[in-house]
Length: 311
Image 1 (cartoon, rainbow, N blue to C red):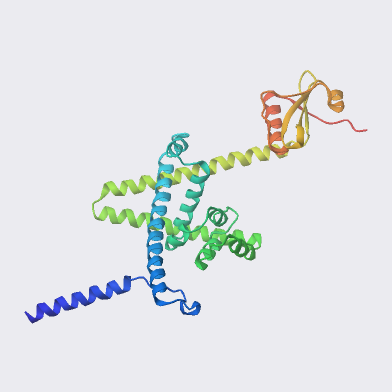
Image 2: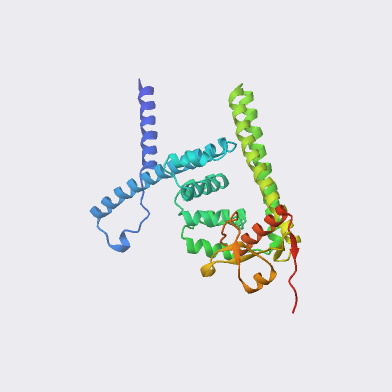
């Protein structure tokens, strides 16, 4: 009987200790501001409500970002179905982009989940910028900085020499790949050992989709790079067709848009008369984009480069 009572007392004491640990403790210096005890109790109670609510919000945001990314991977081979899907939920392209970038930070630093959830959209964009070294972004997150001005200063202060940055990125990327690969293998082996073959296959399919997405991005960038290299081969700004028409890029009214134009001959081009926009080609925001249109159009139609007459 005495032993049972002792056990109960021990359990009660442990439970009480756990409850005391879980109780909210404010770190605010009430004494310095001469805040009375009754007001202090009122504020501490509200602090606890705010803190607990934020924990729920942080958890919900994490789950939402993760779910969004998983659906994106699942629908990556279904054309524009992902966009149609999230628009059906009432989400905008900008909001989805922000949430997916937030998910990048969760994947990079899961130990800072609450901190990442508290970041503004601008702060998330700054930390996930493609020109920012991931290790540098992690250093900022470890400091717990949330103010975008301070984040910008920290990122700018740590700007590295380009050669060193490439070296660091390569080392970091190698370590990251090893870590990710080990996690995948360990996870699948554990599930195989537990004879949970279905879950193991699901894990493999999930990461196969991620790899496929990366392969598609690499292929797209290689194609884009190839196009840019082709553009570098052609430096002239005029092309001529078999009928003597001259094709060139010109800005529109207000000089805030550009398009490919056609003149009946070189003299008309020089005098800026009988000049018309090529209807099948769009207006562009930059001259470089319009020039790409010009080169592509000229190659497609087998136009020849036309070199302006000096003097």
